[in-house]
Image (cartoon, rainbow, N blue to C red; front, side, top):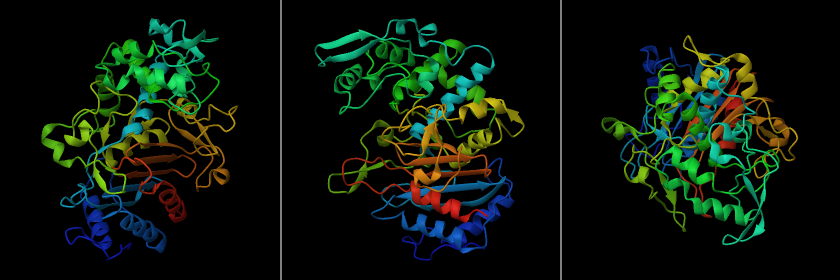
Length: 429
């Protein structure tokens, strides 16, 4: 049986052996809806992953983590490490609740694709079909924030552009100082609804013509969430709750956490200038479980757990269905996980070479160039507060790592993503 390191920092935290044994026992009792059993591989390769996560959590490191790996329909690795609070008084639990930030984006993509399959929209529909104020979009041609030089965009923003972050919205002060300044001036974060978000963004000129450059920006996905509202006639939170979370039995996922469950929410630390970890000063850090924004942020507003997100990832892995419920067709999942940016070099500027982008997440195009073990066609994304997931259909693999830490300044904790994924791929048979 897989056993963990015995050099744990807190006597309240079980050792790797006891933790995995406990997971096995709880799995046999039907722990975590949708997981029938927990399997621990009897070799040193899973031990390496266990050791890495133990060494990555604790004083001076990430406060805690939950990790889960499913391979060929079986949970082959699962555990929790460290603590859920910065003070180190609450051991991390398997059902701890995390702010998943941009891991919300694939959920928003699925909502759009469900409406696509119902014939209510097309990927190449102009955004102005649903939000008329986006007719006649302009581009920044020069000038400054106070006196920008604007020209008419040669083409309209489409839903495909929003899904692939090629709409022209850019938050890049080095390459697009004026467009970035105008986007900042719109102050989208202070909007009170998705309708308000759209009204603010409709006044912002673009950095580039739609379809010409990749600029990763949450504005794209917030607008997609607003399209879901317009097309469905429902608030975005209600749509994803009724059409995605309830069918998949994602009972701990939403834009806010019920008051009686907020004790499960993990602290959100960040770094000071000298590298000391302190609680972030955002509202959802000060009062864990409250809405991150006043509107249903399709770009980064969700809370979730490892078990809940596994159900969503399983749906993607299993060609659009999970637990007897089908959300999307196999061919739509194929489209979602297909690289949409093959003509872009590099495909994702500022991100990894060897990656393209599908409809709401990265797509691995060349693992060797990317410098991380994986497979061509592998799909996934991460969240700003150190949450990660990947779906590898060729290996029938799902890997999820949830932590809470917002990188700030130069004194950042090292990203765990590359070693985590490499150790996962080294361990699977």
